[in-house]
Image 1: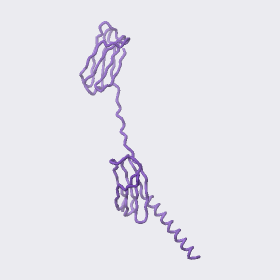
Image 2: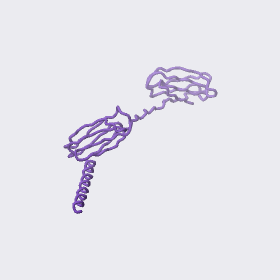
Image 3: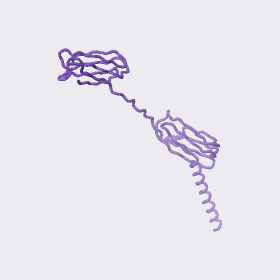
Image 4: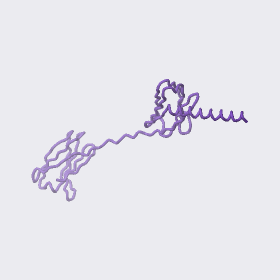
Length: 194
């Protein structure tokens, strides 16, 4: 009976030592993701270790042996693989730890499209000054339409880069009775009522 108790105590001590060792490897390693890149960090003193990457189905994608006598960072680029969960297994002769990480696609922010900057100013009873600034390409279409029925009165293409200022003389029509529809080469449109 005493022998059986000794074996049970020895077994209990052995498994508790293994648990402490596994906690040591977990405490001395970390795995981080940044979109589709994985970084495995091993602290100084881990020694010889094996790093393996597995896909969602448990298929081994990569395996590598390293020696961590000082802090070590091992990068992995998974850009050629689909987004999802991956497992990173780090093992030494005494212990093993597995991390589950998820890779995601990097979403580029949409470029901000600034509105077309066009302004109209009444000069006198039959003349309007049009100012268009901030153009990136030449080729701005200017339409003058009657406000009451959207009938086209005048249309022209102004072929200047960056911007322009131009006076429009309205024959027999007051500035309050029309509006300007300005469209630049990029398709940005602005309606200007005087």
